[in-house]
Image (cartoon, rainbow, N blue to C red):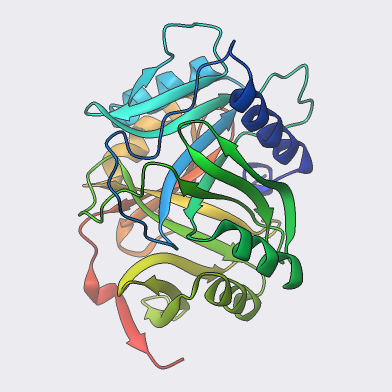
Length: 302
């Protein structure tokens, strides 16, 4: 069932918190890398700056993402390490946490998106008074910066970070790397108000070819994230990461051969511009053609 690939349980939040705390204080585990290897001195609040995959089978997802996107993996020379750095063309683009099945019974594999914030304390206070929950209070994670895990009013999980090395510079998307992050929500108005007030986002509203509204959160005059109403039955609110590709159809054919699942593919998205995919352990992401077809979206009044 499709909901099995999307639903996020409390167990995975517990596992994320456990691993972050463990990595921050134990010399027996590799340190997580900084958001940017070379300090940028830049901060872009409201930008998604990192992605971690929590998975029940590290070997399976390495094979899957490695063969699908050409990603490489760095275990810091320790085959038993619980954190693996994802690289593409030699650049750090994300990480993998190992979910120990014996300690995380019932946990689901999931991509966790990290949102840059400028003043962690003020953002946390806003969340507390605005209907969200703080699952992990802010703490300092060596090399990474100040980190917290929150649950928004629609129960979507999000990691917050104030990077000790600065945020990545704004650049054009690269094929087989991160393109976009999108909130799937049951209440668009509530979600838009929550994040606009939390970050200071502005917004634009577009009409898609399917005649549905698509909301874009903007900061620094740049699009930072999308917000859509959940259209699929049984799907819980969550943040969906996107990967830029040149031709989605070429990836769709490979997914099942590598042990993954195409949840929505050629038959479900107009123009074959995107596909929703679950990796072999059930973590969901979207691939989308780049450059975008600007004619597929028409800006409208709110």
